[in-house]
Image (cartoon, rainbow, N blue to C red; front, side, top):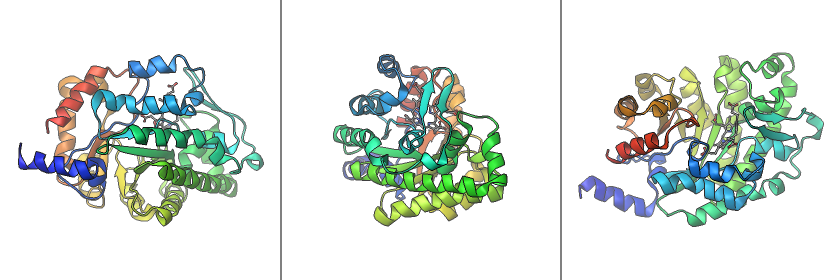
Length: 349
Ligand code: 1CP
């Protein structure tokens, strides 16, 4: 066994490679994939087909724990991500949320005055139970990632009422009625902080904040609606748990990534697949550990293209603390064999 693999073995016993990397180790190559549990996996579809509503799966601790662990049982990733959804927060605040096959999420009309934090932890208690169940089943060399949507992204669903391409309502609101948007964002900051603190109490090792629609904002608006609320959540969590790493994912933020890192206080960022690799190595990776960023389409296509795209990413980032991931979630049509191929390539590095 080489010195390096011996060292890896020693480190793994004490703390997971994922957490070590977030704290600055450079010689490990932990990996996981966004949406690693989900519809591309036959064992997920088998469970999913017996459950009517997607939220019922999120709120069933035994099944949600099983689904969380499924990808690790198959591929032995470095970390599991809690199986839940970013939209459990509007649900717990009192807005109706349902998931319609082929359509996606559908949310009820937003009556600001009726939304409140009163029952949040009680409604979300099955998620916390899922965390404890998964934690008990994971080996100590594997990490459990908790997560939430960042306020801007969750607010897009709450205000648009569904997935959106143009975000017409919320983008008009931020100019015409900023104080109304501020109220919703402030409530989401409080709700998300409570939710994440409770996930940590229940056993998650790290947190990821998904800001999937960060890319649609001009710089000043990005500061107001992405950076500021994220910074508040980070400071609320750090006040109680300074050592739990927080990964921010302001998808599509481009040249605003460095500002996001400096002003939010996140420990690491996840990069999306549109970022130029050499630019990110110089301007982002010099600031903190990064995670990313294979194009999910390269994984769907597979073969030599997937491997050469992966190699470019490793060449750009492996001299500093780096976690391999995708630039966005696994597409549901992705063949499991392609994921197997990618994993065996990563394990050979
Ligand atoms: O019926 C099903 O199986 C529904 C598909 C599905 C799954 C598997 C949805 C509906 N959510 C999830 C799980 C999920 N969602 C996870 C845990 C699983 C894992 O990563 O392994 C996570 C972290 C999320 C996060 C999430 N949900 C985000 C942020 C990341 C991203 O993809 O940008 C967003 C935007 C959502 C909203 C959401 N949930 C589901 C749908 C169809 C949507 C809408 C997506 C859109 O508007 O494009």
